[in-house]
View 1: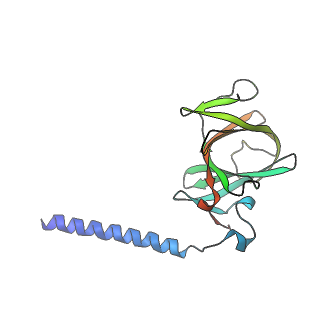
View 2 (view 1 turned 120 degrees about the vertical axis):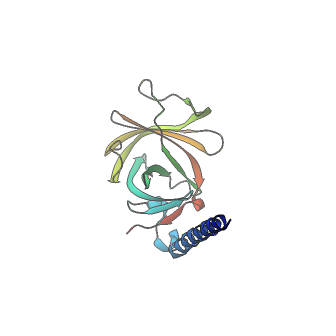
View 3 (view 1 turned 90 degrees about the horizontal axis):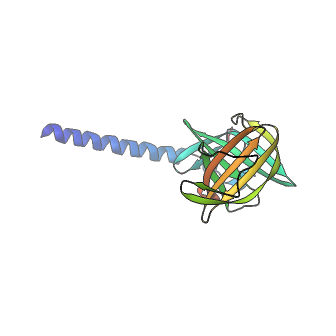
Length: 189
């Protein structure tokens, strides 16, 4: 009985200590607003940190895409051993696309279809074209300087899928549209 009581008391102390440590770390993080920096999600750079969905994501690389006077960025994010991506359109002041690379797509022919099925949900082609790409930092070798084909798909709600073609290399992503106020921003050094 005494052993069980000691184990319960010890486990409780470990749990409370872990909670207090996490709370202390959160308080020590500086609160930085986009306005005070003069930049934010629209101007991400390598080594910036985004906080989202319980993770601290470091920006490892930025691809700036430009087409017909419109510019947007697509950034590779790292959190420990996980990879994520964010797509930020300056014209969308309310949200950004947050997602991850997926490997279960295959493109037949020279371009994707006008609709596709992903995880039992139908996505419709929203926009496609060719953009000029400038890369800063480390992406993954699939984005390169030069030109890139893009295909953006959506479904009702916040679900999104996007394809990129650089040379002969294809990249496929799945994610969702996330309100900007749910994505924290800490500038890199």
